[in-house]
Length: 286
Image 1 (cartoon, rainbow, N blue to C red):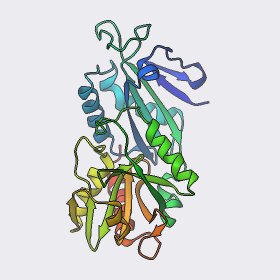
Image 2: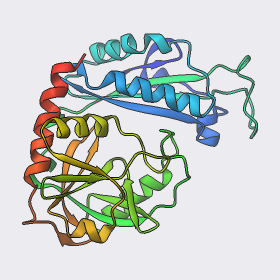
Image 3: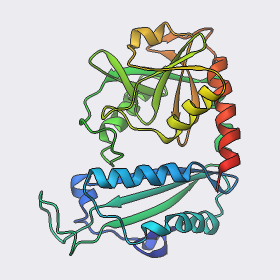
Image 4: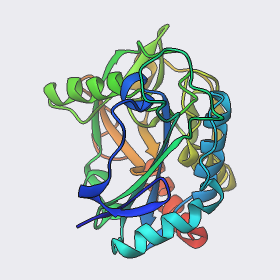
């Protein structure tokens, strides 16, 4: 049985309980991070912790009491659950003051809720999907305006995944004002020649931890990076495309709205960036 962490305690998953008045349950008033585990080690942990702190600050949410112990908690969960390859999910909410109210509870009397759990994903870095690539559809982006904050407001991205599934595809890219913002759970890129094009950072997209690392590695490999919006039509005419996320790393895209890219197989830039990212990230894994 899986061991989870809840507010200072390591518990069997069947014994972990959160109040029905917790604001994440009632108001989606919470933030989260997902850190990949490869070979029992955490990938890009420092980046995830910095983004978590930023999300909390943007929402004026308290740090949980165990904030400074998060690395130790991650490592202990990986150890007790015997995670070789997988994920550690972390969530911080504004907690529960024992009732439902739109007004934030007083942080002096209402402590945040801190939850962590693991997911075992054997062979995470060797996904067969990376060999065949993703097929995606485009959908309207109707999310709230602060997508840079990693909140638990994931209903529309979940609906987007289901739209893609119903269309016989793997994922969806969201479109706003004629341009791609991002995927349902990843950052989006196209490639033209040796130039990687991806939307610049703003409140419109999540500031991906994997995104930052991949763009740094791309520049170090003498690839040109252009941060600007691109349309779905430009994407359909690109040489190749890919997405990045903490759990998918670098994942090629081979089809957009039924139109194949290149020869319909993962392109060389995406494949090379995936190799570089995994190789370099494993060197720094903790």
